[in-house]
Image (cartoon, rainbow, N blue to C red; front, side, top):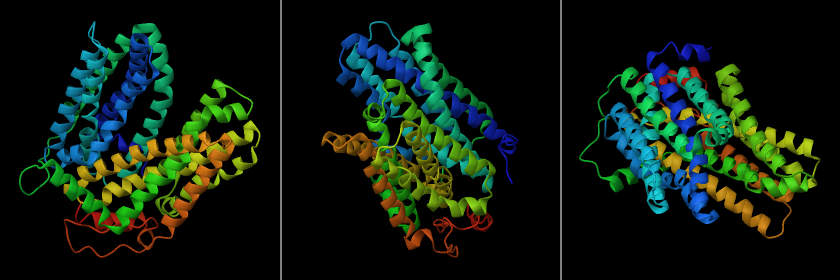
Length: 425
């Protein structure tokens, strides 16, 4: 079985992993710094929310911007994106920067995130093969969750100690260091073969058609988009739920951290200690657990029980970590950037939509605990519907076309898929 330590025997991964960890951890510093700077200058929660939305809204252009990862050499694209973000974030720290200009720069900086993510996701299966890639993807997802929790906590302290401007400069430095690591440790590769010149809209449409034209990819995306979107809706009503449970802001923070901790725990178990055959069979039941764990909240249980259920919900949602890796492995190399762009757009949109749905339900006067239960019922319904889809259960098809490999089903053993991928990956 491949272990996390085995991954670091691959030279390119030893550079790609810290590059990812540095840039994402620095983003947490920047998020808090931007919120403090904008609110201090304007006193407006709306303007502050507009600024913070920059981290999510540009992802809607993922299918368009992700197509760059299928047209340009991916190593060079990663470096350019990191350097561009380093320069733009550093400009945010300039003295006297008007709020409007700062927000515009922030949105511009985040426009480089979808092509960076697409290029990195497309490059990783070329760096790590087969089961090693699934382990590596699990480790990076685990790092993402830990960075999100620890980064926000340390980011708040950093803003106090080194000021918001200092936190922004730290974020810029992490991007610059990430670019240096990629330049030093990742070998150049040619751009994926592509016909004709780059046309953003045409390439984006081709990527969407490719993903949704494949029954397995389509069912996989719907499962990964919708189950967490509904299940994580609990975070949108964390404070009202904490109030119902007899707590306040501190308990609301614990509620959100508990879900993230459950996800990180599940991701670690699935990608580090679970044999591939067992892991594959567990993915659909875990997706169902993500919704089922929230149903008892209809009964308004005590706080300790509610937190245990939310932890189980997070564990259930961790099914998406290995499934995301299999999704990228399934996609033909020339489409991986665009496929990742489509996936990111749906994930971001789903997260925002789930939050809005939970907020709307709660706004109708439904108690927060019942709102979470409703979100759980919706997540469970999606998991059962997708689990019944023939595309996710049928055996792997025989490969006949190197540009369009078949989809590995959730229950297919990793060794079988490695044999398939070896002919085309």
